[in-house]
Amino acid sequence: MHEETVYDALDHAHGGEGQWAFGTGFDEPLAGVDTTVPEGIDPADLGAYCLMLGDDALVLCQRLTQWVTNAPELEEEVALANCGLDLLGQARLLLARAGSVGVLGRSRTLATDSIPDEDALAYFRDPDEFRNSRLVEAPNGDFAQTLVRLLAASTWRLALFARLRESRDPVLAAIAAKGVPELTYHRDHAARWVLRLGDGTTESHRRAQAGVDAVWPLLADLFSPTDVETRLIAAGVAVDSGELRDEVRDVLTTVLERATLTVPAWPAEHPSRGRAGDHGPELTVLLADLQGLAREHPAATW
Amino acid sequence: MSAPTLDRPAAPDEVALQAQFDATIAADHRIEPRDWMPEAYRKGLIRQIAQHAHSEIIGMQPEGDWLLAAPSLRRKAILLAKVQDEAGHGMYLYSAAETLGADRADLTDKLIERKQKYSSIFNYPTQTYADVGVIGWLVDGAAICNQVPLCRSSYGPYARAMIRVCKEESFHQRQGFELLMTMMGGTGAQRAMVQDAVDRWWWPSLMMFGPPDDDSPNSAQSMKWGVKRHSNDELRQRFVDMTVPQAAVLGVTLPDPELALDPETGRYRFGAIDWDEFKQVLAGKGPCNDERIARRRAARDDNAWVTEAATAYADKHAS
View (tube, rainbow over the protein chains, first blue to last red):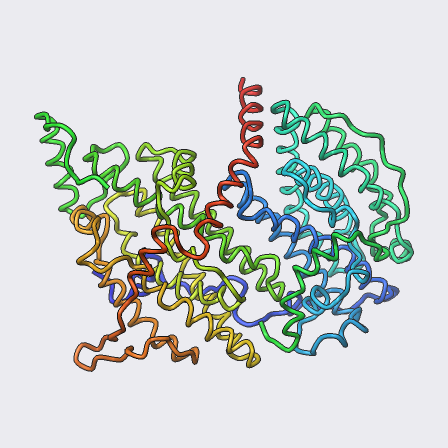
């Protein structure tokens, strides 16, 4: 019997395995990628846009992660962690892209040079420097509200990423292309739950409707392009978020109606607060959890 | 648990079935769900597999406590993927138990009501991020020592589940070690964190192999049936022999002044394990027993309406 050491036995059973998830040591997520900014695109605008999209993903990942070890079923632990991991992957790429075009500026001075761009941006910016929308930072609420929010956020983001695949920035286009199948799954998963909860029991219907009513006003933060976006739309880099409105409204309406839920009136849209760094107090709490340890040891290597 | 005897006198055909079962075990072949098996074999396996599944699920918590605070995005991805793997392990182990007639919801209830156990190691808290690395290195390392032989368990579904579990555990073990290596190359505070975590987790890791062979109530029958392949003490010794050189590579001191290479056997002698502590934790008096169970209870009870809704929806749309 081949069992000299347990590891030998393992290798015997499965063949040698040299692969490591996420590599050994740190690799820049964009290592080997040509990060040259195409002509006619303002790097500062591009960086700011990547922060908006990257922060959305990072903050929603953090929210979904709060369900891990608390979810209703093991399948749901896996599914929500999976969505969180996808979003984390998107956040890393987008923050790295932002770093590659020089957005770090004053934030960078807070961190030591050994900290990778993605971590300097995730861990060493203050709440008012985050550019995520209000939709993703709101607390989870119960399972119904969490899934309604995931449905809204993934529907918006999928509509955006599908168009962003044509961006004139090839890096952004590639990040979007990678994200589309991920977001398709997130939207599908969330939609299936909204159907089950809306059309399940009286109690689940009540909670799902309350979730919809809580999430709906937050949609107002998503559809008015900022000045940065307006310039980048003209440059063929960004997607006009106003163009996404009809698709997002149609998808959400279809799901909610099939789930026997009442579709609230479309909220009065306003210039994005989140994209301007105007956040609720809950983002400060979320970031304190995220950043505390890293900030306690700014010279550390992880 | 009950002694491995049949509940009633064996009918003549049961004698033949028992003989066939014994022959399968003796030939080192696998028992499959549709095969006849002695009731005590079935019950014992359910107990062992459920305990193992519970350990995976409870084991998500100590490391899960660092998910929100992981100090880099790469570490967060690694940890989230790992905790997700553990949920997956729990799922396919519960599935293996279900091939024996058990029911996942019922087993979960038994966990929450403390009628079934899980590995005591998860009743210790994770105090710093180094604990995440040490759990990977020592706890997953010990789990691998325990579990690799189970890939050859006589019960087919369990053996097959364990192949996948072990493959992923070995991944986790190396990721833990890699985190510790990175931290040891970092600041003085990080190195101190690693040593402190090693000091706290070393002895509980040795306890993971269970009581000494002369005090292990379920071992003998499990070994006879090919469910278990090596004794607790034998596996513990292997773990120590494997780990001591790794500690040297890492540059940490294992907290055992009696730890020394025996030149005659080539194996490491180690100090006495505090079995009173083991029994205390096993008896539910560890630092985090109540907290671990409370979280499982809350996940079940607070979200019961979700499961009810899913069932109601499935019933409505069944046709």
